[in-house]
Length: 569
Image 1 (tube, rainbow, N blue to C red):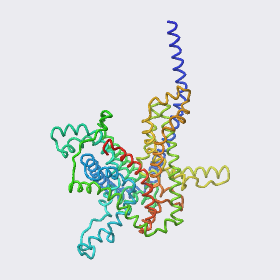
Image 2 (cartoon, helix red, strand yellow):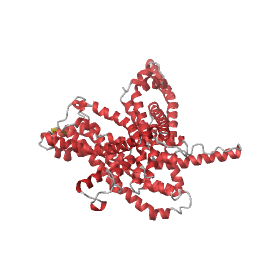
Image 3 (cartoon, rainbow, N blue to C red):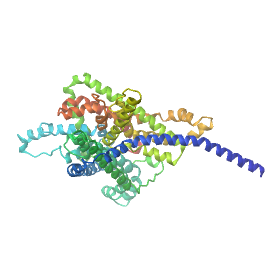
């Protein structure tokens, strides 16, 4: 009994020592995640304070003349984009899984290529491609002998429906990817059972696969709608007055910061409603994974040969040809007419600014994501985990809201610091953060930290769970274990996270426009300025560079899909 009591005492001492060591780690991790979460929420808090301040004299005008039309247009655009992107994404995902036709393997990864095209570039390209002087209407006039636009009817891209089509054709890959994974992994066994009972492929799709894939479809559509709300370049260029455009117009045209903040809070409520709707749609989501060997079995497909096969090929390829092919064709054609612009100082400076901003943002964002995940790993606390998830909500906030809120907060900080320095030191500090590269980097880091965190976390989850404990048992401290053991193994995931953040920062438009220094042009802002002056052709080289840069992560993703041959890509 004495020996047992001695052992129990040693266990209690060891447990107390472990708690004593873990307590500082937990408090440090909690402090870090709390600070990051506060920075992420800073734009929202700042907007709320601005919206509630002042006399509120602008609100009656906004509520009566601006808000109703902007809300109706935004809801109509979101509804159309949700329907079109879901239809295109789900249909293409099912066709490449259920049927075998020429070029199916190639198209299964090529369907992701439209993700390389920012929506505002797609809008510029579509407007020019389908313009009266464009190749499509020119071919119609030549074929039927028409002379003027009055001789025939042609749909107008510069409309809510046209904007919805453009956005859907570049954003549908989000739905395609999530749906395709479910059709391959979740729906295989139950679809086989349905086929053995005599159900035809179409009935299997409507009655079996579609209900199973509904949560994944909802997740993909939610991403599409977030990108739609974030868009300002495409909707403005195509003449669609959304809430996002109304925020810009209220601030820049009316000079009302308070009114812009109030409209931004309304837009934030729309975003929160979308998030709640997505969570509601996924409330009954369940996954049942089969054995690993089952994942390597080819799902049965219906073979299509001859005319039927090539018709299916053309049908599946059409969204990719429209969403990726038209912008690539349009801007390549413009660029060939302006080859000298590729060596112009203006384009070189814009490219340097884009690479500098995106590179710094990628480094900062990935570093913060690593610190958050390491803190969550060390603390193993529900509070730290919850705050880490809270720090990732920046991706759900439109860039306009992010930029406006951050601009107000940084301006208040700079003015307060300048007033303090004038009073106590007799000097002026000026604007240190407002209108600086640091402000752009901060906004993009807040917005894209979710991309970096999810990429690194997915790599961390693939590592053996006891690897960290094994390193500690050999005498490594938690920090040394993270640096010398986990970090080298996470290099692919870290590289992927950095590339994703880099490319999304290069494509980011709304936050860069609002927060950039005076005269500081990136590739995105250069294209936007040319389009605003109605000289889209001059934007060809810069737009082509953006597309080629954005192709990097898309090609990496496409290669991952192409290498997955055993799972029947």
